[in-house]
Amino acid sequence: MNIAIVGAGPRGLSLANRIAARFSKTDKNVSIKLFDPYGAGGRVWSPDIKNNSLLVTNTVVSQIDFFIDKSVKDPGPIFKGKNLYEWLKDDAEEYIKKHAANKDYLKKINVEPNDYVVRGLVGLYQAWFYDNTKIKSSNNVLIDLEKEEIKSIDKKENGFELFFENKSREKEFFDFVILALGFGNDKLTDQEKTLSDFANRHGLIYKAPFHPSQVDLLKVPANKPIIIRGLGLSFF
Image (cartoon, rainbow, N blue to C red; front, side, top):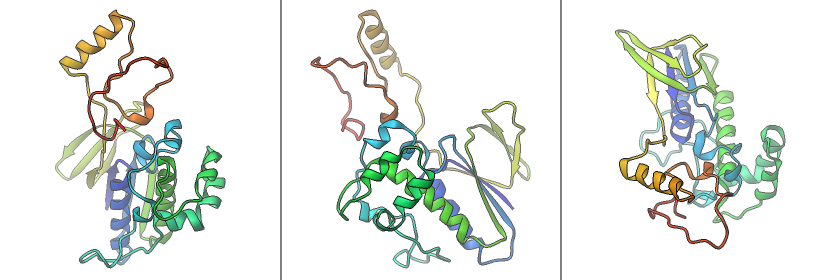
């Protein structure tokens, strides 16, 4: 059985872990393939996005955990593992030295249980979680992750065909497809288009709603008034 998970953020990785744990207790062969252009952790937590070494989480480290335990009703088979705080204490230094392009994360791993860490560290924890899932899966479970963006999905009578943004790549067939897309980019509304056009005409800067860690703020001049529309997490 071939399963595709589109999106390798927290939801996609957790699903892969649960599927792998369940099928590892059977003799049925299953292939789980995750697709995400940002890799394990996805866009929100990617350690390779510069601002994710600055932006912090909104949950303390001791409460961030991707592993299921007995506190969950009817959890099924369990792959035991460490929460983020335990990982930072025990495994983060070695893992970051081997896998992180930005070694500055090493300076940010010494935290207390109720501290908040930068998003990139959570992304590295998720990459470790993915590796841990692969290690603990039995031989009948194959897990892979590809940094590919899915362009479209075509439903067939007996499954699904996935088409890739990379046009040189052949389509691929799966028995099941799970969408764990997270947050995508929106097209400008009519009002946002009006604001953008106004800014362009008057030499101002307008940043449309976008992923906060990827917004370039270096062009915003110092000591100038700024309007922020919305009081959600991006506001902070």
